[in-house]
Length: 315
Image (cartoon, rainbow, N blue to C red; front, side, top):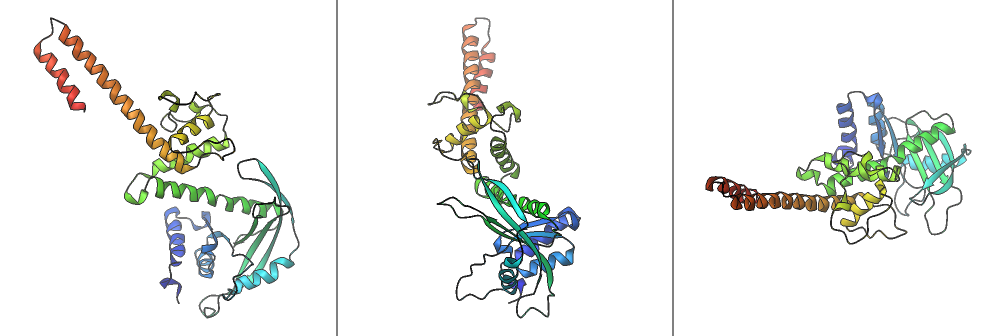
């Protein structure tokens, strides 16, 4: 079937639309998961003069399913390449560190069978990162990245691994925008960006003061009626945790930092609480003004009526 009739054609359309928005294909780097590991994307990027980094499919292939030619080449050629070196990374939220063995190789990749008349072979660079000693109970890190960038040494390969790791943050942002703020229903996307920004800021610098962010980015949940004592010290991570608790986060001792969805729900509820408090404060002040006005013998009936009209008008 031609790629234009498949659902995966959206990857090619997204590539073209991104380039059209930026206006400079050489400045674009398209990062994708295994679903975008399609030969047509590689050829389209080559024709448009842009770059990509895609996570290749696993070498363990389900039995009975045909393997694409570049998957066969990956299995045959990449293991023969020597390891270029080791790279240390941090995993998860518990400051766990581990070592990766890294290798890379430029492989002449053939188009899929039946499409060799339409597409030409491509010289692609494959980067393999494998965890040396994974802890028990966790899947080992095993990345195989396909890209059309020049990789000459270990430092460049590690740089490309870091670029691809940013894909998770982009996906979390899109999830907050689609599932949380419901951007497809017309909600403003800037709200999802603020949620993502506050969540990631608390992870990157948890001991920062809450006032280091803009006032509209981080509200102060400790000013509401609370069932728990105020967290000490008043750090950005502590305030974010209180917001997430409003959104259903259990805040257990060994839980990871709050996610975007819990923060979004907490901010929504905190906004409602703050809005209700502001209404109550204004109405309390207006009721007090009405009482003072009625107790003042010099006040006229008209002035009292204005106060009452404002009170009911606000409701």
